Image (cartoon, rainbow over all chains, first blue to last red; front, side, top):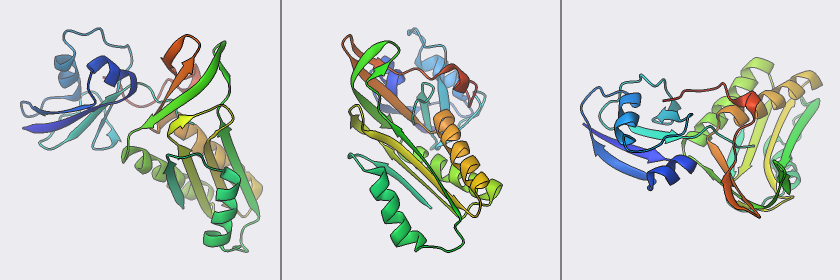
Length: 77
Length: 152
């Protein structure tokens, strides 16, 4: 299935890109995807995940066409 | 309700006068207005801040801000709410955010403004990158807001 991945702030700096389209196996979880994308990277301790503009649990199972975003804790306001 | 992400410098007080004149139309139910304005400081974590780049997640930000104002409307029975937040390049003294709520009595407006602001700090997807004498750094959240949302 196809998904669209976005990275923000320090996570984007670490990944070296702001987005990518990926072909992944169906019912991959957010956490499994993150681990596979960062195998060769030293990842920050805290990374948040949102699917289709909503925070999700790390065990959330992705569906075809989902937009998933990885980013550090937020610092607005 | 008004939710707006601004790319350019704005005047929160002008925005409030404008909203009151053109949208609230001097609604006579309003007995209380509560306003919070956040501005850029020139000092953070013992370092001088020259300027700051603010980025956000378009789409998700607006959705969350709207949900926050709607929650406050329900919880405190407020009449209306407004959130305007800057993104882009900001300099010390520039306004970052204005949150305003209108209600019949002061307690609900005070509480609603605080709730919206705390929810914004904890969940709205914005990130600050400061430029200091030692280069750039991503701002880390303060400890009290570190127990929210979901991690991978």
